[in-house]
Structures are given as C-alpha cells and as structure tokens.
Length: 302
Image 1 (tube, rainbow, N blue to C red):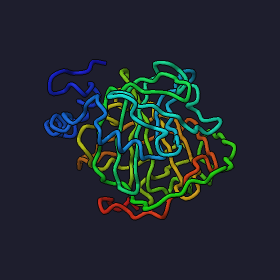
Image 2 (image 1 turned 30 degrees about the horizontal axis):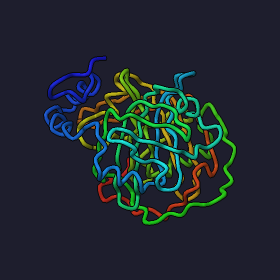
Image 3 (image 1 turned 135 degrees about the vertical axis):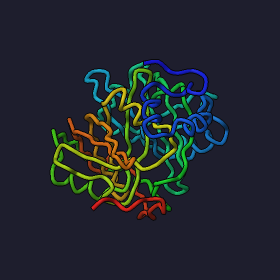
Image 4 (image 1 turned 60 degrees about the vertical axis):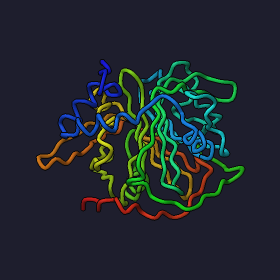
C-alpha cells in the first residue's frame, strides 16, 4: 500500500479514504504536519517519567495482533537517541507479544499515557532486540490532546506482585463481559503493510458495548481527524484490544478483526469480532486511584 507524498506524506491510502469519507481531508493535512520522526526533548522527558507503556504488534507466528501493557520503574522506557526508544520491560510471563518483541524488524506501535496529567505520546517504528529488552527506531512520533483521558491522580507500584496465570478463551466469559462493560478506557493495536500503531480510546463506563460473547462495538468519537487507526483497519482488519483494571492491575487482551460502519448522520461505529481472549490477574504491578472522568466524554448509548 502506497504512502502518499507532499501534503499526504504521513498517510497511507486507508487513512486517506476514511478522511475523505468523513469530510476531514483538509484538517488532516494540517494536523499531519505535527507528525515527525524525532523525539524532541520535551517528549524524551515525558517518556522518562512513565511507569507504563502500551505496545501493539502482530505475532510473527500466528499473525494475530495484540496490545500489551509493559511496566517498570520510571526510566524503563526512555529516549536513547533522537529517533530511538529503548525499553527494559517487565513483561508478564505468557504475554502473547513475547515472540514479537524478540523478533528483529517487528513493526510496533507504542503509546505512553499519563493519567495524572492526561497527556499521551505515540511512537511507531521498527524493533530490534537488546540485552535488556528492545529498542524502537521511530518512524512516527506525535502527541495527542487530552480528550477522553480519565484523570487518575496517583498510583503506587506493588513490589513483589504475584501475577496470576493467563487464562485463554475463544470468547468472552461472564467476568470478561462485566470487565468490558465497566471499562472507561482501552487501548487498540492495529497494523498496515508499512507498520503498526497503538492508540487510546476512552469514555464513560458503558461506552464499549458487548453485543455478544464474541462481538464488541463502540462509537468512534471525534478526534484529531488523522484517522490512523480507522485507516489501518480499512487496510487490514486485524486488531488487538487491551483493557486494564487500573485498581487491580488485571488485564484483558483480545485479538480479532474490526471494521467501521458509517451512519447516515455521520456517526462512526467500530465493530470488533473476538478470535481469542486472554485474562491475566494482577498482570501489571501498578494500582491507580479512582478516575475523574473527562469532561469531553459523551454519554454512552443505552
């Protein structure tokens, strides 16, 4: 799939098609100028303070796309060059991205999100293994606005946290359904022929609907008009979702396929079909305070 030059240099055909459908091409051209390859000093400082990094990629063996939560003491993810992110992760045993994060050349998308300040930063590129973890050579580096990020004022790191054993299912069980229905945040990994991306989705609890044990849906809220995620899904429907229980560290990872439906009123709905689900109790040793919901959150559908 070609990457267009000039004003569209940062977008592939999938994103351009969605921008055109949404009537956002001109705005996307303007916003796209903020995407670069360099990690600027303010971004490097932000990265060095974060205890959590979300990574999205495709497993090289199965081809399935997953999103995983990596954690460590602040500084475990840091800029080690103008275009290099180095990560020394505390990866939960049995995580589905273990193989991908050890494979040279793996396209990865990363997002660092700070609930305390409601700031986020995304970095996409290619991976190479290192002695302590992996490094990513950046192709895209950019920040997003705080829209739909729930504020969590404080966190603590639980030393010696006893992680649970990952449990795999072919669909959502009752506990997973309740987990999704109560979530105010999830992370979404997508891919395209030239790379990978990890993005954030947030809203009031109930903004993600469980339509059946194998089907989820959510409204695509207005954002930055780039449509990187929806553009990727147009090019390749594979996707990975990560739900995190901020109070217990439990994660729910889903892999499957997604597509976007456009309504007559201009609203967009993303529908996701589950291929596999992995639930891991206490996977992340971080415990965050209760959320203050973003004032930008629309009310979820009833």
